[in-house]
Amino acid sequence: MGRKSQRQGACAPARELAPPRVPGSHPGLARRRAELWEPVPSRPVPAAAIMQSQSQSLTPHVHWAQRHSELYLRVDLSDVQSPEITITDNVLHFKAQGHGAKGDNVYEFQLAFLEPVMPQLVYKVTQRQLNITVQKKESNWWERLTKQERRPLFLAPDFDRWQDESDAEMELKAKEEEERINKIRIESRVPKDPFRQLKRGYLFMYNLVQFLGFSWIFVNMTVRLFILGKDSFYDTFHTIADMMYFCQTLAFIEILNSLVGIVRSPLIPSLLQVLGRNFVLFIVLGNVEEMQSKAVVFFVFYCWSIIELFRYPFYMLSCIDIEWKLLTWIRYTIWIPLYPLGGLAEAMSLIQAIPIFSETGKFSFTLPYPMSVTIKFSFFLQIYLILLFLGLFINLRHLYKQRRQHLGSKKRKMK
Image (cartoon, rainbow, N blue to C red; front, side):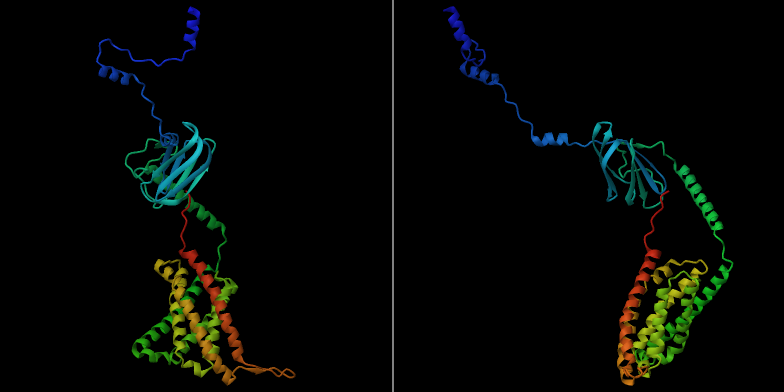
């Protein structure tokens, strides 16, 4: 029986432990002890907290140095992969996979620069580190790198490239002197043109004469416009034609200068402008008296004179190596409204001249027998009207390239 009771005791289910009962204790006090004896259930940790703890980013060690126009950053990461480096709102954003102080992980950081920088940057990845070069918008010396006065813990000076402001200025002056010497050496290797000064004097005098001629035209037309008002439109040709004949005939020299190579300007734009203006002046306006009293003559002459009023002084000063920034801007900007307006005025004169040439039969001719076909000059004017807009497009494209060359954004050189 003893063994059987032992077996039954072994197979019986385990009973929960009850709190010890003190004899003679109050029942309410016993229940309070039982509640305190019960185990407290464990609370689960939220998944968001786990994800947040796992996704905390690591920050690499960053060393920096500067020059007057550049900033240098060295990120202590080896075996860098997929670097994402951008500058937005003057803040550098960095994120990359690499091996750093915390092993192989994703490292990232942000730096708000003290002063404005260029949004474009250059970086180079090596086996042991990543180097970043940032261009300053203004060439000056910064008292610190970041906008915040307190330096971030991960940021330290790069003593391998560190220089004081005085040392950087000496280095900058040495580079400028070296560039000046190299420029002198390159210029000394280029053979000098013995007629260079003579060419400059010739071009200076040509541009001066053209400037004086078109200035006379512009002032004369402007004064007459203020005095006579709209009445000055109808006798513009008889008042201005002689000086316009002289200036436009003299403009053929520009074609010769391009052919000979005295100037570097392309031949096609000069050829189209000079031939187009002289065709309108001598053929369309000069040979038909009915056209000479048209108001469109005023707008043609006025657009031509305003354009040349800034073009020739610009070339004249270029001959003596003088650049006036305001004049340069006007010369490469004023054509934007005036060239299309001048082209429309020339087209309007052609449209008004076509019926006159068709009625008078001027410059028309008849083919010999057996064809015996009369070809009217007005037919050529219609063809030229189409070609006029093609030539205008070519000139506008050429002027746009020149404007980008002279007024476009200049990229800072990497030093």
